[in-house]
Length: 91
Image (spheres, rainbow, N blue to C red):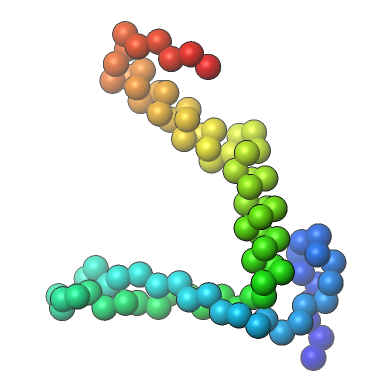
């Protein structure tokens, strides 16, 4: 069976995934205690792909200009300025 090329710089043909990641949450609508778990997704992957995204792609995205971290800081500054106008926030 031929697998498609991975859309990242690993440039290899995928082998069948060897690991699974289970994404779950608590069922907040349930009336039973403890709340039951709800499985929302199963991701099949391999260690090389996890390492690539966790150690290369995610950190690069986190420090990129205009990233989510920059937006969080901007939001904090804007809210502080509206709640406490006397405070001067330096860049």
